[in-house]
Each structure stands twice: as C-alpha cells, then as structure tokens.
Picture 1 (cartoon, rainbow, N blue to C red):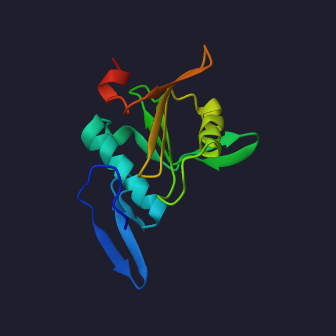
Picture 2: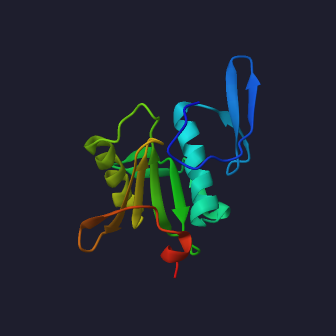
Length: 151
C-alpha cells in the first residue's frame, strides 16, 4: 500500500487467496484492504493515538438520510453525549480533494451537524470548523484534539 502523509501505526494484514484484509480496531474484524480503507484506518489511528479521540466514540460507515436517500459517511467522532463532533470523508490517495468532494461532505454535514469537517485522501488533509449559525467555515491547520472540543 502507498505511504501516506499520516503517522504510521501497527497494523495487522492477512491474506485469503488474492484478497488482503486489515484488522479494523473499531469494527473488531478483518475488512478488505482497499486504497480508501488504507486511508480510513490511518485516520482512525491518528485520531485515537495522536489527537486523543476515544475509540468508543468513533463510528465507521454510519448511515444517515439525506434528501430521502440513505447515505454512508466514512467516519464520525462523537462527543461524550453522543452528538457529532467530527465528520471525516476519506478518499483513496489517487482521488484529489476537489471542490466537489468538499461540497459532498458539506452537504452530508447539513443533516449531521458536526462542528468539524475533515477531508483527506491520505496525502492531503483539509479540516474546517463549521459555524452553522453564522454560516461560516474556518480552515484549520490540524484536527483539534478531542480535549479541546469537549471542554
């Protein structure tokens, strides 16, 4: 798999025939290792190990409804009360983070209401603080630590 612009972590790979699997610490099972999954697993471990997000408050591929359609988000981080804190949209490394990707995530976040939005392809990362009342977005240089978000 491609080296990413995220801290390395100890991962466990297994292979069955031609298919490679990676151990997912959140779902507690082996999942097929796709380029997007490689990015998602790096982000999960970054949030837990480097930004202090509790493993039990991270949720992968959570469903939500938007415009009467069922959609899936890549990753959510929740606050202690279960409200969304961070919405993460992961793309495989070969997919550039474009305005269309940002629009997709922002559209999902209209129904989710997370104050932080992170877009990443593992090589480029964009994080915004979203103020729904003022309808503004502030670009951040990094994902805020969990403790900063739940003061």
